[in-house]
Length: 158
Image 1: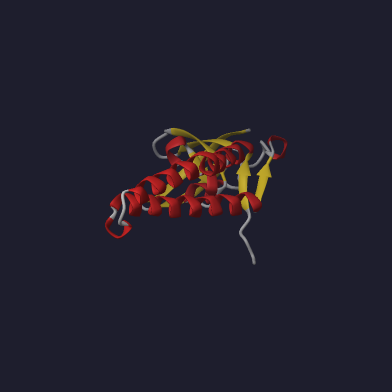
Image 2 (image 1 turned 90 degrees about the horizontal axis):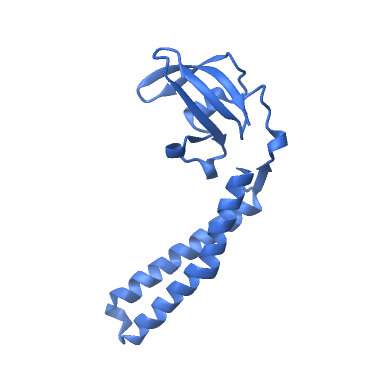
């Protein structure tokens, strides 16, 4: 079985481990209790509480399996591995839109940790791919749905 390597920062690892622990220790018990109560209502063939609880149980078990697989295949990026000369996973990168002069700061993370609303972008996203391996001062073209954005890499830190 050729499982894909999951690249995580130390923070990302901690979040996945916490989610897994919550699902195993709290959510599993809660849903089992809901199923037990729903069975107590009698005929389960037309019992929506039972159906909802069974669906949630299936979701929780699926998520637990996914998280366990991700953690098994995880490669952790340590802070001392992060280079400040070139953009890599774990880098905090400030870019400037060459056209507008607007600046944005991104943290480059593996896909499992990506959260664009928190400016945590995946190394496989259009911006992530375009700036990976680049140096301070480089100008890159990023293909986005609206066209091409030119970004200048202003700063790289960890």
